[in-house]
Image 1 (cartoon, helix red, strand yellow):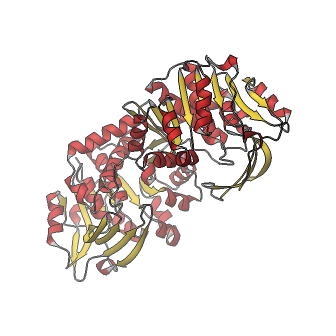
Image 2 (cartoon, one colour):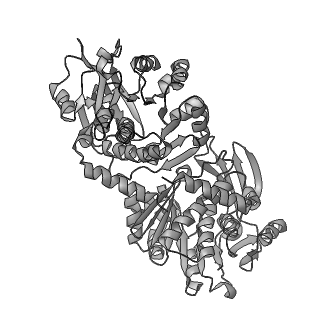
Length: 300
Length: 300
């Protein structure tokens, strides 16, 4: 069982949804990814927090066996994000962002992390993502996340980075923005030509899509009864995918399809409570049960 | 190979989409259904047109081996609908509706149709749909379509009719409206409790969903390269489903899953040109090719 390195943000989030408000709860892309992936394989965390970061959250990482040697404690305040969801939760507005310690952060990959075989570059500037990748020694499988902002403002860096990674995880709007087509298959093929051997497209409540070489695969979302907080669903999804890959050591098309099942299920848990709550309390048997149901839903 | 009876509208549609405008082209729910289902089994048409209905369209029905004994030619003008799609084609406005001969239409099922084993009640008032069903003699499988208007204005009639049919085809918004829940599985279970043994939920570009007894099944949409005219996609979808069922004579859960593949594929052809154009020109081999691709897309 090989380790996964994740580089991304650790945040204190204030989240408002129709189900309530939570202030300064544990969040961030690397956090959600790590607490999802750690259910399948050991995780190493590269990120930064400020002096105000509650020790109880570091405890939560340690309880989940997440290696925090790469978590920097800097002078200043932790990155904070405040979001408010629309009543139907299909959209959100960012009420406020305080970058704080993240503002001038240069990710530092500890020496002991450099040979980690599985790497997830969570959403961030393509330049910072490339800097992390530069530090890695022959990783087996590198997966990249990105967002509309970087597609619009740092396309050249992003395209250069795409040629260096094995997989891209992206949502359907971002895929359309990156490739100029709304057609999922055309978009996926266009991304594969940019370098990655696999592209995984998230479609929120409409499931996920995988293109890997000439294989394409489509999976419905897990039918969650109630969405409480959609924040971080994509990172939990990525965590399930990378976790399954690291656990099996298999990066072939067939294994990626299985990984998409696990990603979809971990995303479904993430949205059922605020922040990381459900993700940390779900039992392994519950994960497997949802994977079985999802598999049954696509069995002819 | 048993016959299918469809009762619904035959129309002359004026359609405006970003791809162009077509005036008074052949349309209507029964038309689209019939021209889709006839690819798999003989179809009998129960509908009405006016004296202005072009003979060339009757010819098109006959060329497709559609039995038009149940097609009434009345004094007056054919039902006309005029719709305009939004640029992204996810929504449309009805520019005009002329009910004409449809206004006081009481569907007449010819004596020779009364023992047709497969029945599709295309969208219409639940009262008119029930009147058609009243005329049928022990059909094997009755499938019902409906719309938001009847759910809002004729719920009692609709619920009473639901207890008399084998399957309901509905889109996801209508399912939510009928059951009061946005959750697909909860909605489907609630509909099954109303009577049907199967419910098929259309999710447009996000595919289809089937609940049959305790089985649930989800299928992505066929990834069409270009949507030219979405009108009638749902009826072509229903046509593929009923066509496959009539062809095989099997109404079990496994057969319904296969039928959903055919429905999804027929819907994908319908939207690729205006009106019935693509539906009538597609070759059997092309249908099977898309079914194979769709099947591959859900194969783990």
